[in-house]
Image (tube, rainbow, N blue to C red; front, top):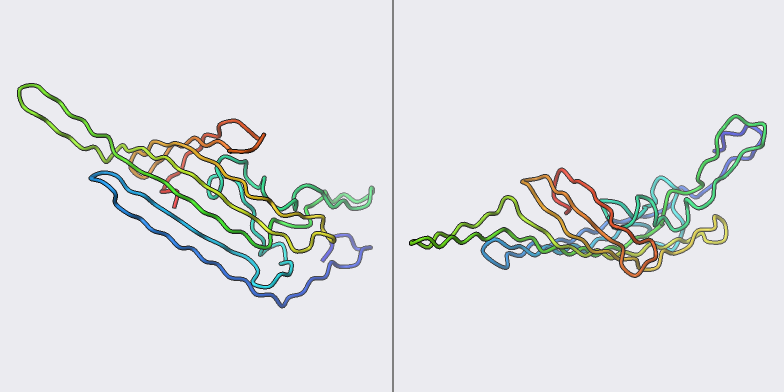
Length: 193
């Protein structure tokens, strides 16, 4: 509903169907190396718009860390809905994000291998700290392009590096194939996926 008492309420269908799929594979590929793969998708099963609280936005540490948070929201955050000039209520976004998203993530995690030769051959595998190299790609779809001015996201992708100290990770990511360049540094208190 609208917060403006003079406006008609915004109506949407409360009959919709959504699904979420999240497939992950972790494969040990060496003594202290792991390859992790993730394919996930979420959103509407039908090709129909979802209410904003069920939409999904991409960008940020959880999905595409090379892009800023909510920067890939199918255009839902490109326009504000404004009330009348005399209304004290601020503008708001008519949508939250995309009606459907798909994402692929891959990361290679390795440890540090220290060898010391001093009369005896010392070999020490360090799993903590460790390093990680990652790649992410995603896509978002919007199904009410005419009404809300939303558009599909295309297929943005990014890559990055990180250092893990136990469960804490410090990462740097850059968007690839985009003019939204620049390294984004972020900290996570758990694994990326």
